[in-house]
Length: 464
Image 1 (cartoon, rainbow, N blue to C red):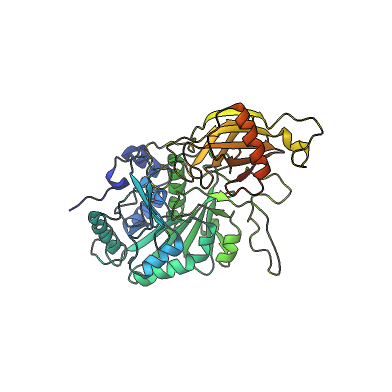
Image 2: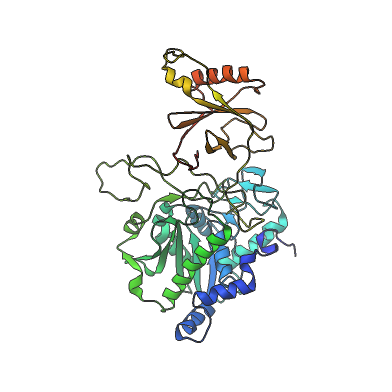
């Protein structure tokens, strides 16, 4: 039988070492002779635990507690909840589809098959391989209860980390779909929500304990994103899973779980976030910036934005996920966001002008802009996040649309705003830089490949 590639066939990361798993279980109350431990053991023994995405960290969280006994189709890929429901309702007919193949950013993997018909992406599997199709067929049958591997009457606990807080609105539909597919057993669903100010379990009066939501504090993904590690994310998920299991097993006081009338109210209590496009990017949750509009309806999302307008917000546009960070298992378990060095940096004034001079009729304030000329590394892919030191701080930005490796970019800073523009040709001299900078300045209002980045104060990272 062909072996399917992917994390399940790789050497387990250190946080899944048996000794670490046992210590983690003991710390969270699993094991020992206390009555609560026995209740937890009985619940665990009578339950099949199944991960439903949206990234591999969910399955790692189950493995970190020793709960995961079998592999299922959504374990090691990216998936949206509406796409997941679609797959369940159509027997996964279009599961192994894709429209794009690109070089993988995950260490040890060759390619990513993205933009599937159902909205997900494959980061560890060659979906054109017949052996892969055979293995996934087996996993799908297992999920749908079409094999005798798991007793049809055994309780199922499904765990999913939402890719966006909008997915919470589909919780009832997902639970109902699972109940229809597996009518002979109890179905319990846990939804994990990253990037939250408050941590804890939530439930609704409508669905009771059948569907729980666990808010995970933003410590791992907070602000500068340098605190992220796979280990830390897995520990957060394992803690959330263990608390839900303890609640279901009757170990904890039910009053510890905050109750809401329905999911609209529950969702409104969460800090709103989005984890990126499941069809083409790895999971990296970000809070929403911008402004909120309110017309006739009452205020439904009090936590839509991290900070209100007029209050200093976190730096604009948090970076995409580190290479291979959350789509699947990284080569190392501690990894800060990818920082691709940009070479040939030169900072210089835009042009020397008299104090009251103007350029094309515009204020001379434009002349005091700071300019940095950068060369894009030749091996980068479209949409890659780049990082460099400029203007006395670290600047991060996404490779502008249409730019390719080897091209020169111009960064300019004026009034706290950083602009990224693409040169049509390589810059070869300081004089050429100044001339090109002036041309870019005059054309900046109509340049389609330009990106604007609000600069932050202090030593915070500027991001696009």
